[in-house]
Length: 130
Image (cartoon, rainbow, N blue to C red; front, side, top):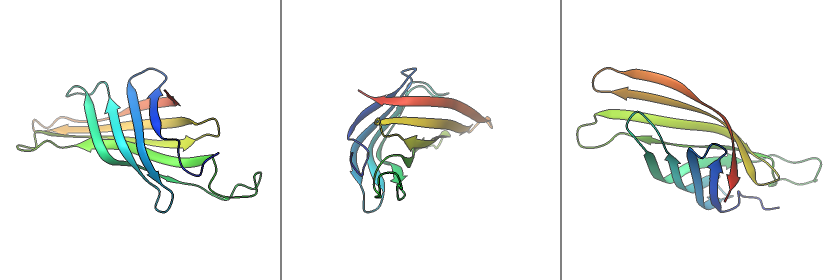
C-alpha cells in the first residue's frame, strides 16, 4: 500500500465525473492531474493542473502513517477570459480507501453575467480506477 494515491484515472460510478491523478506529492499533499465533469450549465468542464490535495493520519491498525484511508479534496474552477461570462466551481470532499477507490461528496456553485446563481449537490459517488 502506497503513501500517496495510486496514479491513474478514477471514474465515478455513473461515468459523469473523471479524476485523473498524474502525480501526487507526499511532502505537501498536492495532486496534479485533470478533473472532468461531463455536464454543467456550460457543457463539459475540464480543469488541469494542481486539482487536489490529500492528507493522512497515523493508522493504529497498521502501526504507521502514510497509508489509506486518508482524506482527499478535488475539483476545479473555471472563469473564462476574456469577458468572465461565468464562474463555475466543483468541489469534492472525499476519502481514499484501502481498496484504491475514492468515496466522495460533491457540490457545485455557478454564477453568470445575467445574475444566475446556483448551488447544487453532485451527490455521493464512488470513484474507481480504470
